[in-house]
Image (cartoon, rainbow, N blue to C red; front, side, top):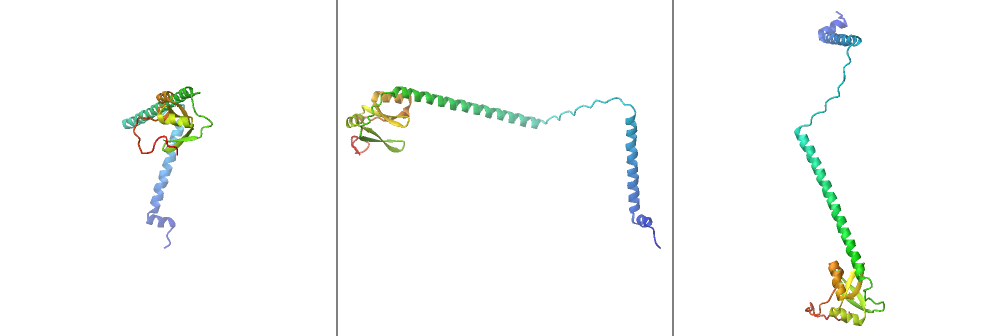
Amino acid sequence: MAESLRDQLLKSGLANKFKSEKTKSEAKPSQDRAPRAQDSSPAPKQQQRPPLPKKPSPSEVDLASAYAKRAQLEKQEREHAQREAEKVAREKRERKQKLSVLLDGKSLNQTDADVARHFPHGNKIRRVYCTPEQLVQLNRGELAVVQLAGRYLLVLRDVALQAQAIQPETLVLLCDPDAPAEDDVPADLVW
């Protein structure tokens, strides 16, 4: 009537399961013991070789070489752009120095000038002060206005043309007396 626990387990099929697991666990230690017995016997030393590196697939090689080529091209482009920027900056400094030498002592601006001559420059209306005689010469094209270091200088026509040859944007105002008027306002009008 009262069955033992073992009998109940056997009926349910769990006892066989435990038995098979027990036999497997017993078999493993016996297998582990056998190599240990061999380890105790003298054996020749085996050299451990480092694992060979995995050979990359052809697609990985192509991708890596493409990245390397792209990086090299980008580096060359950056170096080329830097050299060009340095060249442009050097040429600009040289032109500025030539202009300074050319215009040194040739400015006709006077401290007591009180007549303002207005002219467009850089999308704004600018002015330079001159004497009444200089205003007449400026409107006739005998004088010109050049810009150097943010200042507007009155110079002779030939000096202004030399400055224009060095750096074209330096020449700000040079009137041509023979040119037709763009509007009905006379050039010698003071406003």
